[in-house]
Length: 368
Image (tube, rainbow, N blue to C red; front, side, top):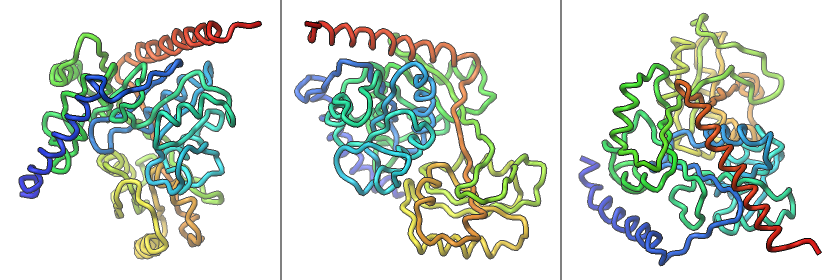
């Protein structure tokens, strides 16, 4: 019923987005192409496709050979303009996902800027960090002011595009046909046992074009980590079901983590907040009350890595919460033998275009 009421708004939204894309396609609205490798990672739906783990995968893949920089808008940060993210930054200053990236990869350049063109130009000045060899644009599929060399779009296996609708009736940011702009399509959050037949069906459903490549990934959870120092080391192996868990999340889609945590305990309480939720002191008090009400001597609070970035900066968190608070890291895993082909495609693109960029710079600024 609600979708029917919102459908007229979806039509209006679709007309606006279609018109904007058409203006870019006709080159009436200009897109800037930079003289270095630029890789965009984004999606066509609102949240929950795994952008951050896939961006982290790319950073990990490239960082040993190239000077890597990431650029995102820093969603829900309270700062303005272009900003370099440091490991000592807060989520309010940088946004939770860029902060997570910097703390995980302290040797790469992490930056935020609402204006992607300005952000890239600032990175190329090299005032605070070395000029990058490659820039990863996080959540930039709809931000067409920059022309990436490789455009990666993520699609959640659990949310087929053909079954979705445009905002606000559905979760689509733009029409599913705009996937045609992507060079690489990643089907994320797949079940580990996805069969080749199912892969071919999905490939047919997305109407893969000759210039596109498709890959299938799943999320692999790693051992839990304490959010604060001093917490006891806890191992979740699914064998001891006596452990009680309070699962606290502020993410777009909880399906994957709910399924994972269900393997660890038969006693799970949940507190779910909106995506990128800004935790308040009242939230902390409610979490504390909920945790204390669990009738067990063996219990923990578990959250996501993204939520941990925001919670760690919260003032006045009770000691009992700090001792009990853990996060569940997640990483990308390719299905089958697709990882080698994907890695080669990305690395070869950066190597070739980095060399072209260096030759171009020498031509423009020959040595005297």
